[in-house]
Figure 1 (cartoon, rainbow, N blue to C red):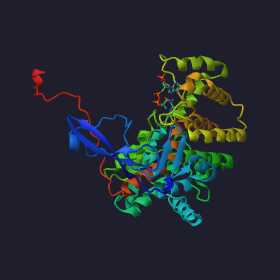
Figure 2 (cartoon, rainbow, N blue to C red):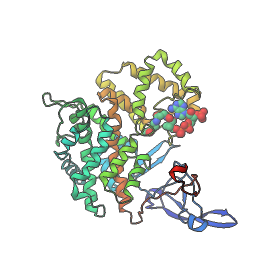
Figure 3 (cartoon, rainbow, N blue to C red):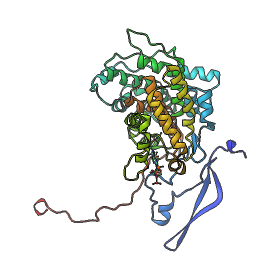
Figure 4 (cartoon, protein in one colour):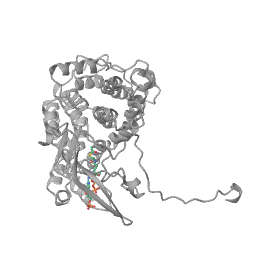
Length: 439
Ligand code: ACO
């Protein structure tokens, strides 16, 4: 059977055998459609009285999923079987959201209906303006986003029943539609400008740029090259399999928590610098280098094990080959800078020289440290006039489609149970309580 025709994990004749304390136990092995096979250890504790220990999930598949496939060694990222570059070049973010949620690209009629339903939910409850006004203007927009996303549960009671498939779908539409509105509100609030309402006659990315940059006194003409670049960035970040924030969304949702609360948990996880914050760090690094002439000195520091300096935007835990998203953004970057007449921008010159060195220098080549998606996205955002503290917010807007698709997949699965990892306890053994006067 062709790989793409297989519908689910298949049992194999192979088994993994473990011998422990003289007892031999067999575990069934399952093959996925592609990628590493797994052996099912769910009965391990019952059979042997042992748990496995795998801090950071280095060798653990936490779920079965049909949504996204990554082969880091080959530099492959696919949503529902489609290569990411094909989607970025030929599709748009809402089509991709439909694909992630429903498993198929929409036909023309389905697309019209999907866009109509999204547009139906782009506005947020007017009361949310007061929630925003409670935050200090200097708040980090990710703090505002985490609060605003969770607060949606207080406004939309009619889609909180996670056991009702229609309500789950309604929440999915609400989240995809409202996240750009909330993100633009967080930005506007930080600048002291009035909120701009969504315009449903605009495309998804175009509307987002308009809510970011339009003001009541001056109409903002959205540049189609920038809108297309933004849409591509949204597609490229829409899902990435079981990363930290997605796993957080699934884990929060496994208890039956409502989807708005789960998205807020995902935003919190994404906020960490090891996850969503790298593109901001790229801009800081380029600024710190300051000039092409300072690059050799900086590279010497990067190679020095004692310096703790890393070349930000290079390397990836999963991609030990070129990050396929970076390939798409490399050409998008040139289009955007060409359109904006920023091709001679000093930071860009530094970025291009760093890229050249990293792709030819033995240190980087031997460690397979290629530019990742964050290397280019930060530079594109900066050229568009988006401040660096909004970069992770944009990641959250894009990832909403993936988070909600993964949450929905888990909730649709009748085998879903609350996620409850175990531990290797290394604290104090049992001891007698000591009264205060004797401590
Ligand atoms: N600059 C310099 N050296 C590096 C870098 C880097 N960016 N990344 C890894 N290395 C070196 C390490 O020092 C190590 O060298 P050694 O073998 O001599 O000790 C080797 O490459 C392997 O590094 P690890 O840390 O084991 O690689 P890991 O897969 O755990 O790390 C990570 C991946 C965290 C992304 C890392 O490459 C890094 O810190 N990159 C910079 C930050 C960044 O761009 N993050 C964004 C990731 S993309 C995303 O999240 C969307």
